[in-house]
Amino acid sequence: MAENPIIEVRGLSKHFEARQHLFRKSGVGGGVLKAVDDVSFRIPKGHSLGIAGESGCGKTTTAKMLLKLYEPTSGSFLFNGKDITHVRGKEELKQFRKQAQLMFQNPFEALNPRFTIFRSLLEPLIVHNIGTKEERVLLIKQALEQVNLIPAENFFEKYPHQMSGGQLQRVVLARALIVDPIFLVADEPVSMLDVSVRAGVLNLMKALTERLQLTTVYISHDLSLISYMCEQTAIMYLGKVVEIGDTMSVLHKPKHPYTQALLAAVPSPDPDEDPEEVRIKNHVPSPINMPRGCHFQDRCPYTEAICRETTPELRQADTGQIVACHMVTPYLERKAEREEHVI
Image 1 (tube, one colour):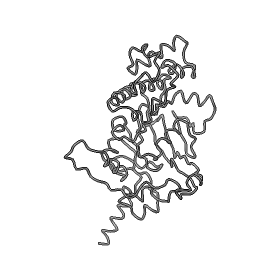
Image 2 (image 1 turned 90 degrees about the vertical axis):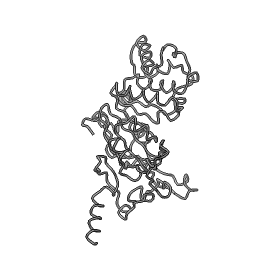
Image 3 (image 1 turned 45 degrees about the horizontal axis):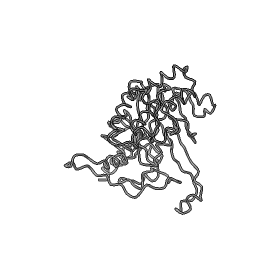
Image 4 (image 1 turned 60 degrees about the vertical axis):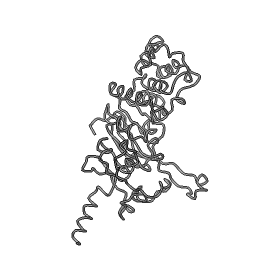
């Protein structure tokens, strides 16, 4: 990625202690749950990264660490060139959170049902001491107009229950942008909306983030959303980034077997298309006390002995993206050479 990133994550990990009594029935026992395990990436100013994967892969935990809602177990996090990994001071956190905002998944839960829309948008201005009374009214009006809720004054005295899901998600976006952040995390931003209104909200978000030069992270299991919204894509599996790079390369020329399996599971609108099937075995294993080697070893159709012994490092593939798989390392090249020599 380009130099001078707004977000730079270096070996970020988040581990949780799994108390034994919580897992007694499953026979798992106590141990350590590695929700996020040694994740690294960079996002330049004005660029977007999509983090995708199955439920439990660690994408939301990663997002929470980026917003300082979770403290990492290890690793570091640089924001706009400053290491804020262990920042805990009230004023420093307040300044950071003015610059880094979250767009919640469920707009019906993100807004206080007892607050009018005006009051909900006024709250962050009060918290961050932005503007005079008159200026705040103007800022709220501009924020609503920015998300195409026009005329803005018609929405001032409305309550959340009086608005549709699409309108509420626009309000949530307006509230995030009203403090003029430089970084936005959108956690499944349209998953709670009707299909009929999703495209409108996504088009609005795309236009605004590009115009405002926002650095953005999208968390989603929807690869079509990631493909449309993001320049870079990271695929996570059991806490690990298994593939990361340019979205076109990752989603159209995937190298990791897990990425290939995810894409093969997406239904095609063409009834005559015969998609390539990637057979993965078994179920997702317990994230407690993972065995050594590749996390995907028990499900991968290409598992070799090295996969059970050595954790694959992230290496660049011939199509540009970075992949954590022994399939795309010199190991397979050497293996092929040895087999040819034997023959």
